[in-house]
Length: 347
Image (cartoon, rainbow, N blue to C red):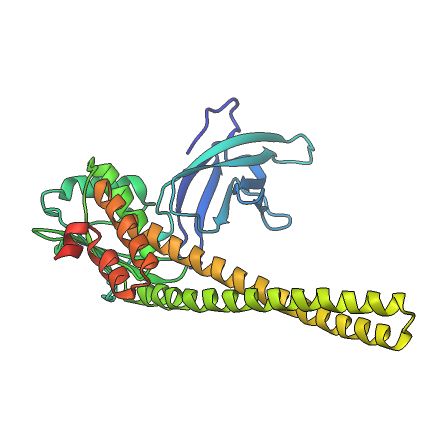
C-alpha cells in the first residue's frame, strides 16, 4: 500500500509481509522516501472494538524505517488505516501526520511451509483440479501475503495457520480439489473464496471433520436432557405456586382469627417455600441458558458445514442438518455434513 507524496520527506508503506520470527503476527514495514526523514510513530487502527496498534522506535533512535507487528485478522479482506507521524532530523518539534490505507488479503494468517502433516479432516470438491491450476495460482497471489504460496510438483500447497499452528493443505487432483485442515470454519472460508474466484456458483462437496462432528453430536445429545429438566422444573414450579397460595390463605385466616402461632408457622413455611422456588428458578434459568448455548453451537456448526458448498447444495445441507436436529438423529447429522445433498442422503 502506498500514498501520493505531498512533499519530499513523505512516509510511505513499502510492504506488508509475514514476520519470520514472531509466530503469531504479520509485519507492516513503513519506510520514508527521504533517508533524512525520521519516523516517530505508526498507529494502525485494527477496527476491532476501536483497538489500535502503536509502534515507536527505540529511545533516541533515528530511523526512516519502522516495522509494526499486526495480530492475525479474520479470514476476510480488509483495509486497515494507519497514521504515520514523521519529521526531519534535528531538534525541531514540527511533525507531520500522513494517513495510509493498508490492504490486507483474506488469508494473511496462512503462511507457506515446507511440508504439513496429513490430517483426517478434509473437504473434497468434485472439480478437475489440474484444469484450474492457473486460476488457483492466481487466487493464491490475490488472497495470500507475500511470499505467495506456490503449487509444488505434486500440485499441492502446504500452509500453516499462525493463529494456532494448525496445518493446512490444498491439493489439486485429476478429478477433485482436496482441502485438509482441522478447522471446518477455515475450510469453509477457503472453499467460498476459491469458488468465487473460479466463478463457480453451484457445487457440492464431500466433507469429513470427525473431531468437530463429535463435539456437535455430543452437544446435540444433551439438548433432550435440557428439555426434560425444563419440563420437570416447570411442573415443580406449578405445584409450589399452588402450595404458596394455600399458605398465604392459611396465614391470612390465622391473622383474622388473631391466632399468632399458626400465622407465624404459615409465614415460616411460606418463606422456606419461597427460597425453594427461587433456587429452582435459578436452576431453570441456567438450564435454559445451557440449551441456548448448545443450539448456538449446533447452528454455527451447520453454518460452517453449509459453507463447504455453494448454491443449491448449500441450502440442501442446511435443511438436512435441521431435519436431523429436529428428529434427534445424530447419524443423519453426520451424513448431512459429509454428503450435504438430499440425493446423497437418500442413497
